Image 1: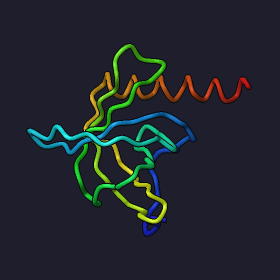
Image 2: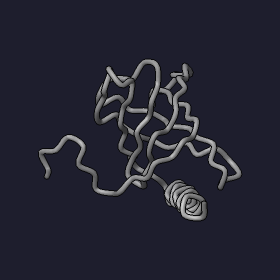
Image 3: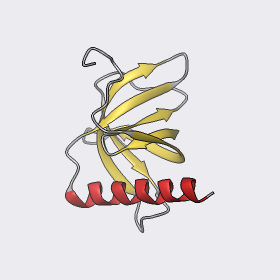
Amino acid sequence: MADDPHFRRTARQPIELGVRYRRDTEGSPLEQTGRLIDLGLGGAQIKCARPPRVETALRITLTAPSAWDPLDLPAAVRWVNAKEQTFGVAFDRLSRSQAAALYELLRVSRFREDDS
């Protein structure tokens, strides 16, 4: 299983949510936009017009309906599918408050799915 390029340590769930991302380097103000396809505590899949390269360090910003402030999460690109215009990221160095806000977003979105 470790040889599978899409092996994940944590489960992901489908979610449809707008997202902004930029390189995680000082002075990198240029933001791109995309749509989250799936999300988990360990990472996410994003659909966009021009995926970044593998290993690019990013800041992922999303506005969660369960949070007062936008979530700003550090991540690294782990894979890219140029044909599908998607890429996967692994979250890196989440603070306790970032992890808690992400957990709450996943909990709320799972509740809404089961409730319908």
